[in-house]
Picture 1 (cartoon, rainbow, N blue to C red):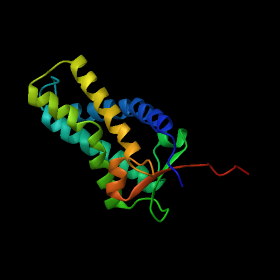
Picture 2 (cartoon, one colour; picture 1 turned 90 degrees about the vertical axis):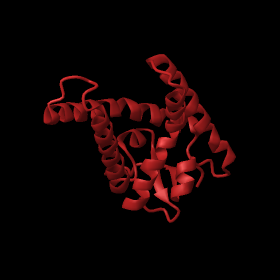
Picture 3 (spheres, helix red, strand yellow; picture 1 turned 30 degrees about the horizontal axis):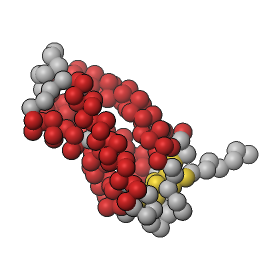
Length: 163
């Protein structure tokens, strides 16, 4: 089965970002209350590690439970293994960690050059996302690199009709 179109997958990607804004804000509030954080830079490394874990739990839980997050469900996309099953814990966790390839090259480049600021970060991440998304054209099945490595694939999803 062929992968959903790139524009559809990027639509789900953007929608996922909007949904994750709420998840990150709620998780950040919990972190601030538990650690008595009074300043944004106080405990920032701990906050980053905590948010990495919270996002990991979010994605791995949804991918294992339904094979899709809410954004993927809205855009009718599902993650399956080569056998057509939902990914297991190890495969979903691997996919989560490797999905950071969308952002890490840009973030590492900014860090290496000592560039700070919202606009340079936005520009670098935007270019990185476009380049990473364009890599699907190098794969005959049009799958993302992290899906190829993890043995998962994105497929179109059709909801079951309601009785």
